Length: 281
Length: 346
Image (cartoon, rainbow over all chains, first blue to last red; front, side, top):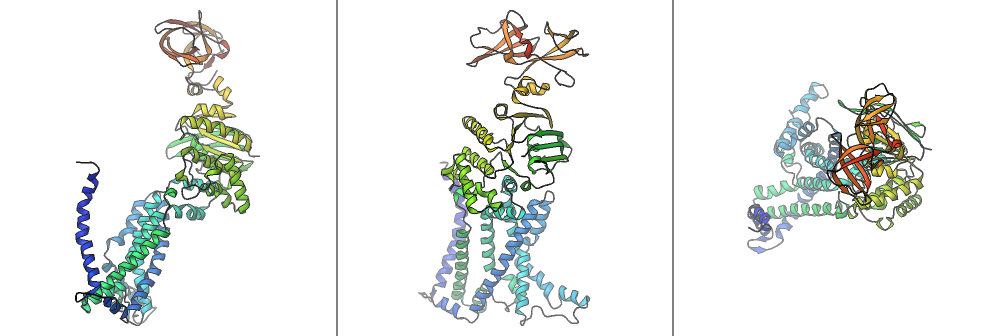
């Protein structure tokens, strides 16, 4: 067998699998989104955008991503810096930080529901401490802000570790000599972080941010568990169109919108955090 | 003025002692080379002076100021790293400017200094490039320029030429010597290459197993090794050693020859001579020729003397044959003697 063909042959099964189970359904969805009763139309997108809930869902989704992702980024950088500097117990710390990764997003939502619920841990604690006489409705339909905060907290708790793991791996790739050179040439710890770590970490930052932003636009189960319909988000609306309103075409349009937003942000971060070939480690 | 004083510096890594109570004084503007085999502690000592390693014990003084508790950036030093550590995400200009920017110098000063040192190192045309677009030799020049641009009191160099190919190394060696002499800085230079050490140094500190065995001028280190190790480490081929037994007061029997030597109570000492310090003739040590290696300017002859290997450098027109018996007469003023117990020179 010709040596050059081998890698392609080895990749073939996975590629075929993706084509059959991803590309084909994707084409079907795109087709559904753009047709109604067999005719091409943009009516599905009009119906989606015309719904009174649509501006709220877009706003909620973007706001959630805009708040959660930067907080996670800062926390992940901080945690990764600390973990990278550990001489012993580094893997133990990594495993502990990574525990939330092993939990499904619905389970994560339920854990935080158990905390914020009317008869949940937080209310019990507050009652025991005598701070409140009767339980507070943290997640009622009137307290949109607390729902939002609870969802943001759950998301931060659940998905910061994935960024951290990527960043720890990236920091491990930066040779120690660069830090020593920076130290000798006058950079204190903060300057070393800003002038050496951050720029050399760009490829990992790129991966971590893109991954996290895409996940942020797909947020669904945590919101469903904590807010029900009180905090509508894009993915929740897609679900609604499909199963509650039984309109596959509009649901498909909604799914395509999420995909478009994800692709848009991915391209944006690929461009902004691009490392020129000659400037790589 | 930046003289350096290393006082009783020791370094232990767990149970391993990398440096034992090292003392070394380096004069202002002196070019000091730390020479030794890998693992002798020379890089550790350099890193302690730089502040990248903390001594377990002892003091480091630079320019009359005790610095061992200061971070590297407050020691008035610049350093050239073995792998250059040229920042890949910055252009050559910004690499050279790095330390100056940290000092918050005005832009005009930064440009002036970067341009001047770039010119000095012949890399003006590379200022806009990134490290990934440079050859090893060019990276080396950037690393040196970055250190010189700081106009430091002290430059520390950790095997700076070891990653270059032989020809480039020769070229850079001569250039470094000129540039550093002109910069009027005190230099500590770590290397395992004795030729590099001999050609660059004002003084060489020969290190062995975490100790400085001898610190002296290159010629002194070569001619008068303070210890057997120095004689066997420096010189290619190294010194020849032959056991000597007492023949009388101040005279010693060496491979059947009686030679005048030091007065000592010991019964057994060691005779030593450099390969080029013997003459083939009708007198001297009995030697059987084993291998002949013509090297151009001279011929290296490996012989058996009293069952031990003995190397002699003879003129290239000397006609010797393998298996031949030679008499090799040591030049009297070049003979050295060592105590086999302490290994020190007598």
